[in-house]
Each structure stands twice: as structure tokens, then as C-alpha cells.
Amino acid sequence: MDHMEQFIAAAEKVGATIRACSSGEEAGRYIAEHADGTVLLPPQASLERTGLTEAISRQSASLDTFDKQQAEQAAAGVTGANFAIAETGTIVLESTDEAVRLATTLPTLHFVLLDPRKVVTDGQAAIPYLRQMHASAPRNYLAYITGPSRTADIERVLTIGVHGPKELHILLLENLSDDFLES
Image (cartoon, rainbow, N blue to C red):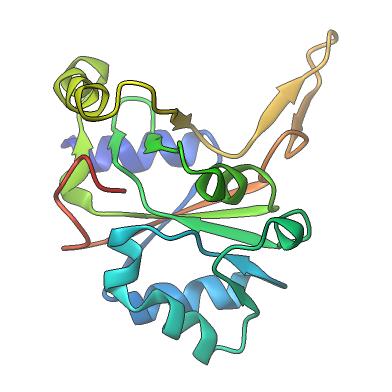
């Protein structure tokens, strides 16, 4: 099994939905079809190049590039990813910007656009990229997102979506960005 197959299997095992998209337009249609309400789209270089804002808007979804007041009511958040770890199906995202943190934690749905070239095999393979990230911004926040939000009580009853999104959709988009410092 190659590392992309391993990533897809691991991400699906923890509850993420994986979808390959051929363009930003297709990704925008997918997001608009699944988001019933306002979509938060924080400013991220890789997302801006895709034309995602226009694609989502054409589908008549309500789009908010970022308004803190509306963030609490948003149905979906969309972000890029710095990279992903195949072994665990984890997305790694530099999330120092408050808009990114809110888009990944408040809405019910989280859509992540990921370039398949930015999937590493395991945590060991991630170390050089993590060092680069910390060297360029030593006081940044990193989010490790593995499936939808989940928590369990003392009786081990698992609940999805209490402390974050109930659904995680990872949209694979070729040639989005091969720069591990860019989300």
C-alpha cells in the first residue's frame, strides 16, 4: 500500500470523508452542496489561487471571508493544510491566525483542501517540515486534525462534534501547493 492509499484508509477509519477534486471549481461545488449555511473561508494563499471563493459564491452558498460575529453561526469552515500524515490520517495545519482556528473549530463541517504531494508517510517523516515551520515562526500554533471532533465520558461513551466539527471532508486537489510552509 502506498502512502496515499494509507492516508485515505486511515482518515476514513477515523471518520473523515475523502474526495478527489479536479479543480477549485469542483471543490467549490462540493462544499456548497454539503454546507447548509454560511461558509467561513479564512485568507490562505493556496485557497485564494484556486478560485474557491468565486466557485462557492456561484453555487449560491453564503460566503464569509471572515467575520468573528458570524463565525459562531457558520455551517462550514474551509482551510488548506500544510501537510498530512498517512499513518494516522492526520492533517497538520499552521493555525496561528485566529480566522483559521475559528474556521476549524466552530462550524459543524470542516473542509480541508490538500495537495496529495504533501502527504508524508509517518510522524518521523514529518519532523523536517515541522522544524522548518518552527524555524520560520517559532511561536506559531499547529493543529493536528484527525477526523471529526470526538470526546468520550468516563463511561467511554463516544460523542462526535461536541468540541468541534461533526464532519471532516478532505478534498484532494492536485497542484494546489507543494510548499509545506503554505496552508
